[in-house]
Image (cartoon, rainbow, N blue to C red; front, side, top):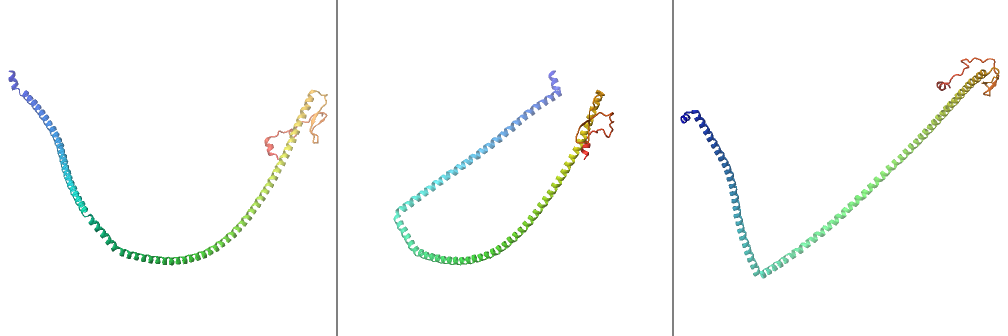
Length: 297
């Protein structure tokens, strides 16, 4: 029954078929990938073999060329050696005849060249003499022309020098006259300026001395007046204080007071009066301020 049920179940059969197809597909894909890898390795190996074959062919071709070159060089060397040996044998056999031929040829050449060389020497000597004569003539003409040109240049230079000297002398005379005039004018201007400056300085000095003398005289007068006022006020105050002190000490005491008089003596003593006059604002001493000192003449 179990086998019949398995054979009759289409779902299980389908699943089994699908699983088998999956395994088959996987195996086929694996085979295909291996085939591709093998093909890739085969291509690489074939390329390597092709390169190696080409290299071997090139090496073989180069070896053939080398062998051919060596054979050609050997053949050429043998030919050259044979030619050298033949030439040496020929020269050895015909050396005396060759020497005689060379001597005769040299003698014939010398005999042929001697008159021609002599004629050429005569022609060259004649040409040299003609050239020297022409050169001497041209040099004399050139020297004569140069002498004339130098004389003319010297005359022209002398004339120009005299003209230039005259012009320079006139210019120097005019410059000396102008310099002398300007120097005199500058000296007069300097003397005038110095005299004006000295007069102005003397006037300013005298004015300053006079102003200083006036200021010193006014200051001495003001100081003397202020000193007189201050001394009189001080003596009056001292006399008043002294008399009041004696009055407070006793009535019978002899009175002595300091009296300020407009005389030569600064201080004198007088008897005591019956009563003291009252001090008014006019007779009272006034304090001296700084403003009064500066304002008073």
